[in-house]
Image (cartoon, rainbow, N blue to C red):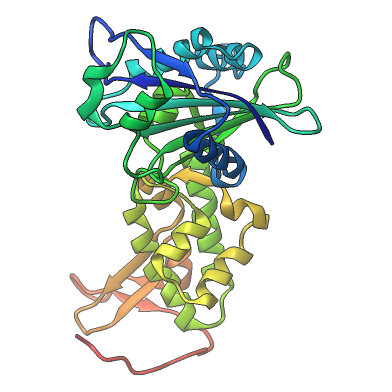
Length: 338
């Protein structure tokens, strides 16, 4: 991809302010260290922005909103004035916690004529803001307020075959947070007016059903027990944005356990879909009932199958319960107790 223009804007924390600070902006020159660094970022963006997002739909269910209009207006006519509208949008949702930032809008195309817009926000150094000139920036100024760590940034990418048709979806990444696939809500939800392509409940349900099916299919009781234990640990992912592959890596499951879940997925590519994990949705589909008796016995099975696996007789005296079950022994072993 070849960059055709780069515009930069200094964005202040403006959330909850009645009067927004004036945003300074400029077009970045075609040479120099800053240009080279941004060119590398632009080249990396297609592979680096791995979380798929879609514009939040309007009342008619169409993927149309104000942010999409602003991005497409800039893509059709890149300039300081069309870019400042996007920067103002970001400033209105930027908190003091996020702080001062530099927004870059990189527009270009490839040999096939496909147009690509990359949006990137870097933290900036507050110490030299006094040198800012109203509505104007210079490359020298940008380099002075530029972040000390060029590896910490948020970015998003949008591509289209036709600028007239506009953008239909995009991909994003946030390299300022601890997790590789975490995304700030203000960056995706508020600024870009977007949501994850795979919704939290849908992605969570897909993982839950795969784990449940894997447990049922496994003959190896040790791996089965590992997955049952993992079901409890997975609930600790509530609210995080991960793909199933990332969740499995974080849990440190054995190769056999991870492979069992992966085989239970309807399509391999769905393993890389990112979503916001929902613990309550997960519990709707993965429930294991455990009953401990005063004689030391512990009974465990899938909640939906428990009553069919363990037949209960309640006529053996007050407070006493007799369970009965039948099956072939597939594994037995001695385990140390704590």
